[in-house]
Image 1: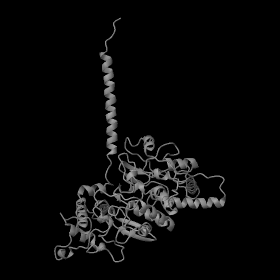
Image 2: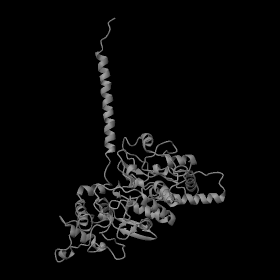
Image 3: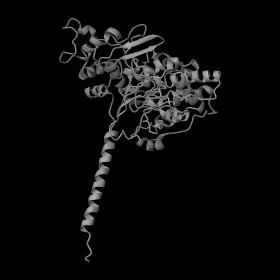
Image 4: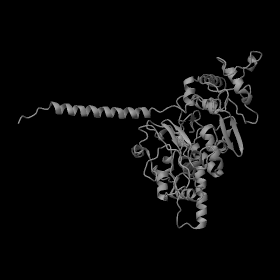
Length: 476
């Protein structure tokens, strides 16, 4: 979740999970139907379709490319296809894949698939999910592309050690000292909805830093912000009702709007959950202890005010385009943004085009989400209504995309006048987001470690040979 928490997951987002698809004996018809419907609901809560359904592809057939700091991961076919999907899995194999990250063939999954969260699923919910994927999902006989991460990350056996270090295999157990809504919210946030996959920062080995749970993290080109109860860095200023409304609608007037993978989470998951479950999620999240961000000086939801330089631009040579040598921030804003967000940045009266001040994307010290919104745009559909902003980063249909330099100038202008005024965006920051987000140093360090180990082994072998050659020989 990119603006509240989704992941398709952390590294960005849910990877190739091999779910199950065989029938389960001894189910009475009525019980079976109820369990299947429960499984359908859980699959929505877990947002399986967001990662395992490619654009214009069939549901759960896989093939979605997911960018991570270590390379591109392709989601797998999790339909009950016997040859290309999960049709030959037993329920035990299904459970092992979902809660332990181990495929039916014994290979380990990467933790981009949030099995570290799904480990909290109860046996009853695992069974319901198993029946749903086995009986209610249409099989698709199509092979998804294979994931081929660069060496040494392609050695899946390395996940055995990672799991020993970081996988908590405890199934969720309610806290008798807490209310039923709080316990239900905990189960959903830490389990099915896997909010921490995106919103919890990760350590050197890509493990979630549980001591800073939900305090914000980079997820591909987007930043999943702090959603703890801290009043400045997090969402401590939100009421439980406001948080619930945001989850349902992906929009909170004058504060925030969902984009990126959070927009997907609202569109494909949260808007379809029951009112009780949404309230339970909000109840738990609002109880998370506050964690202050390193650079927070005030709430990102109240920064900025109206501002316009349109009057000083009129009567000149017209608004410059991206082809001009060096358009100013004011010129880029009026030429690309003002037609929707209004000349003073106040947005439209109905809130469809949000205000650029009192806005989480512009009020945050971290400019990642503003840059990503300019590059990639916003596109989510909730309750049949589409919220849309075109991306200006350049796609095949775009005739005149903005350069890294001009996006940096534009973003700095917007931040300077409508949000965190002391933040300046660089071309390098824009380029990193355009390339899918900051790269991880883990790959280079892993390769360097292997290379160093190889050098040590070679030197040791040379030393042994040298000693043998120098060893005095007995005469006969």
